[in-house]
Amino acid sequence: MIRSRQNQIVKNIRGLRRRQGDHLLLEGPRLLEEARRAGVALELVLMSPSYAEKSLRPEGSRPSEGEPVLVEEALLASLCDADSPQGVLALGRRPRPGAEGLPERRGAVYLYLDGVQEPGNLGAIARVAEAFGAVGMALAPGCAHPNHPRALRASAGSLLRLPVAVAVTVADLDARLGALAPVWIGLAARGGGRPTAAEVTGSIVLVLGSEGAGISPAVADRLDRSWTIPLAEPVESLNVAVAAGVVLSDLHRERAKHA
Image 1 (tube, helix red, strand yellow):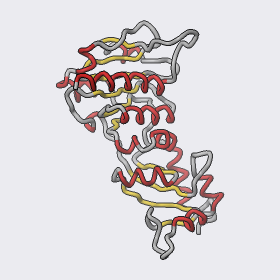
Image 2 (spheres, rainbow, N blue to C red; image 1 turned 90 degrees about the vertical axis):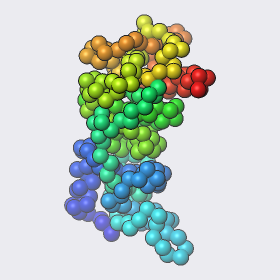
Image 3 (cartoon, rainbow, N blue to C red; image 1 turned 135 degrees about the vertical axis):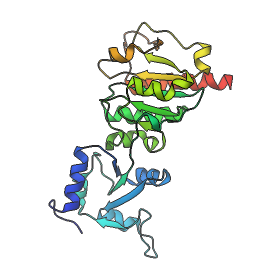
Image 4 (tube, helix red, strand yellow; image 1 turned 120 degrees about the vertical axis):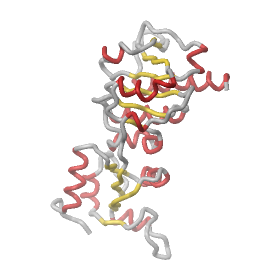
C-alpha cells in the first residue's frame, strides 16, 4: 500500500493534475465505467482499502476496474479534485486531435467554444451537446482542456464519447467543414434573432463565447448571424452552459419536425 507523498506514483499524479494533456484522471466508479465503455485504455487504477474491499466479489476475484494499487485513504483523497472523493482514481489516456478529428456530416450541428475557460461549464456544454444531437465540438485556443477532471465529471461521460477538437482556429474549422457550407451562428446576450426554418435544417456551427467577455471580435467577424434567447426582466444573461442547453434543445425539437 502507498502511504508516502514522496512515492513516485503520487508525484506523477500530482504533476498530471497541474497540466492537461493526453492523460485523463478519472475520479469515481461511474466515470471509470464510462471510460471503459468509451474504449479508454486505463494505465493505472488507484483504490483506497475500503473501496477495494467493497469492490471485491465474494469469490475473491479482482475488482472490475482491473489490477488496483492500494493507496492510504487520506492520501488518495488528496489526489482527487472532487470535494467528496469516492475511493477510486484511474489514469487513462485520450489524445485530443485538432479540427481533423471532427466528423464531416451534412446537416449536422457543431459547437465552437471561444474562450470558455471554466472546466465545469465545458463539461456541462459537452453533456447537453451530446444529449441534443450535436456531432462534434471544437475548442478555440485558450479554452479549458476537455481532459480536466472537473470537465470530465461535469460531462458525465460525454467528453469521453463526443468528438472534441482542441486549439482550433476559425481558419482550421473552415478548412475542415467548408464543404458542408455551415451557417455560423453566435449566441448573443442581446440584439440577435431566432432560428429560421432554413437554419434549423442545415449545417450549423453554433458559437459560444466566454463567460465574461462573450464572443471575441476575431470570431465574431466570421459569424453569419446571431441568436438571442428571450429572457424575462430583470435577468440579462444566462450561464453559458445553460444557454447552450436552451438553444440545443430548441434546435433538436425543431429538427425532429423536419426529419
